[in-house]
Amino acid sequence: MTKWLIKHFVTGRCGDDKKEKRLYCGRLSGIVGITLNFALGFVKIFVGTATSSVAITADAVNNLSDAGASVVTLVGFSLANRKSDAEHPFGHARYEYMTGAIVSALVIVVGVMLIRGAWEEVINPTPIITDNIVIVLLIILTLAKLWLFRFNIKLSKLIDSASLKATGIDSRNDAIISTSTLIVILLFKYAGINIDALVAVAVGCFIIYSGLKMIRETVDPLLGQTPDSDTIREIANFVLDHEGVLGIHDLIVHDYGPGNVFASVHIEVDSREDIFRSHELVDDIETEAYKKLRIFLVGHMDPLDTQNPVIQEIEAALEKKFEKMDDVLEFHDLRIVVGPNHTKVIFDVVAAHNDPESTFAKVEKAAQETLKAMDQKYLVVVNRDLDFSSSTRKEERQAEKTDA
Image (cartoon, rainbow, N blue to C red; front, side):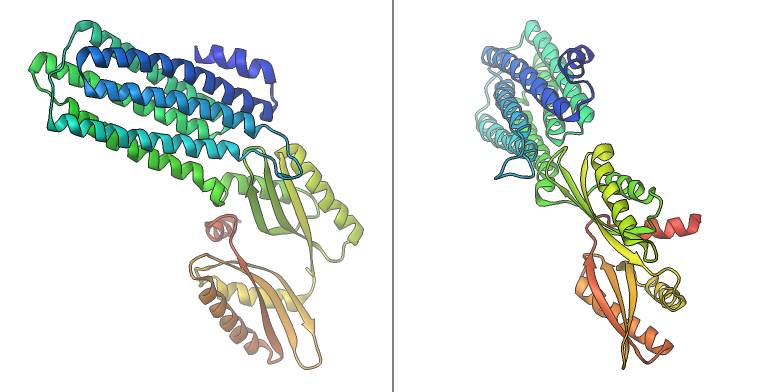
């Protein structure tokens, strides 16, 4: 069923167009979710009323709220597909993250409502009416929710969507709730044990926990989280594969929503190369980045004096010194400016986010001591950078050296 729906309503309509695929996946998830959740909700209301089970009735309310969440998802994906305009030059793709956060918030509200209603039943419990047809219906409804879980997870993987993943996890939680209500009915029918209200309270707590976890996953991209290592590695490898590129640094990625990723990077080139050829190289990299990676990349050209033995000597001395400093992730752009009284040694240092000011102070002191021992005329000038790409970059560089 899942493959048939995806083939006829997603891939069969948009082919390999990523933007269109996101829109169709969002629409399909929303329409299926609205239809199925409304149907399940009304059936469970009937079953809950017939059995006097607060757990089943609460589960019905949860399903109806899921139908509302599916409406939010459907609207969100439609808004996210809108083209950029003068007021929103970076597009509207972040609407997808916002809808994921709204769905998560709705999940939390439902959990609180379930606990409030169930606690009254804990204080004044009522007997449950059981019937074989109720058991059969609950089994069918649970299986339907499990299918909806797998369906949304499949769609989320197809377009790497946090919003659809949150919707899928919510469906999984609903299946767990339905299983719990089924256990309640079976226990009362065959053992005379009534834990209906207690299970409803436990289910409510579980829903709140899941909602809090989901909201963190959807809000982090809006706050500006560190990009995943795969994205960083993909961009870095793409740039470094071009002939004439000696290295890169200061890679910063801005995520304005799925399909709207902007990045900037400093590209190191040989200073002896013709400046127009180096500029053309950077221009070509920017153009190819969008065609191949669908990323708007801005490259800054950094010329390096690779043949100066003095620079090589200074770099080796500083590299040895900084290796022992855990919070120094990288240093680059080393250059010297010779003056009448002193020689400026200028370089950039990338520090971890853990107390960066202390790290920069240690770097300046250590660098000055090291260079003064080499030549009293050396004067250190440190340009301060923070790590905006990956918290494990130092370990990766050390691993690369070991492999080499």
